[in-house]
Length: 74
Image 1 (tube, one colour):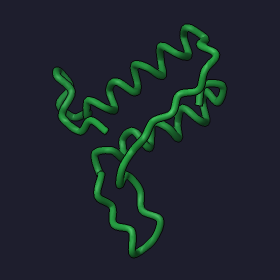
Image 2: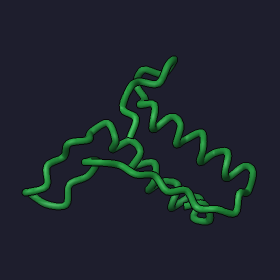
Image 3: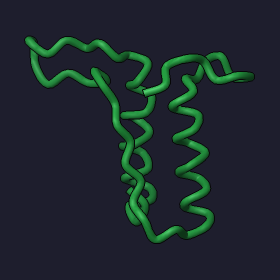
Image 4: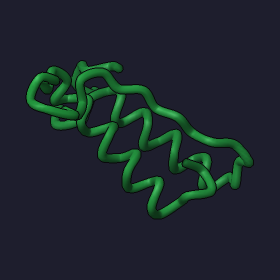
């Protein structure tokens, strides 16, 4: 849920950057566990549900990619 910019990478949120590093480490180390990431307001499920966490959409999108490319981790 960290939305502040990542030091050295102002285009990325801290939560996204840490999630990428964690996912990469889990895949490389072949960790036999699942990675779950929580977001708040990252996607909308209807007209009444407003998008409030645009920055968190990065983590939600990362989850989709990891789930497709490394399903053993996600």
